[in-house]
Length: 164
Image (tube, rainbow, N blue to C red; front, side, top):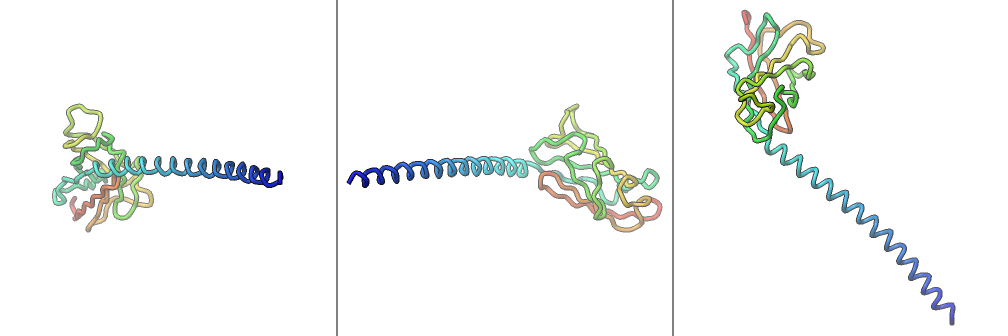
């Protein structure tokens, strides 16, 4: 009869060890899910607070044929502060990704600030010659610039006609 309590004791200890392992695994999983939810919340907040608007006039000649560059005025209409040189922007010109080295930005309406804040305007210049795979400037016709920053997307369309 002494063997029955010993076997019960062994099963009880084994069940405690298994339960401790399960609790440890679940706790680690819950911590990971909690951290992921926090990160997603921060990303969503950043996306909701980011908003830019291209305020250039498409008929005002944004393309300079002699320098082969496109210059756009972009206003930060969101509450999220962006880099003052426009390096936060992803730029696509006529379906071709524009490397960050082919763009330059300058704040034109900031009060000496070191960030592109709400209401500030950035002058973004795209060096068409520096875009990989492009030979020469822009041909006559319709062109598109697509901007993306923190999930906010803007599309700007303009036309190049002979003499620009």
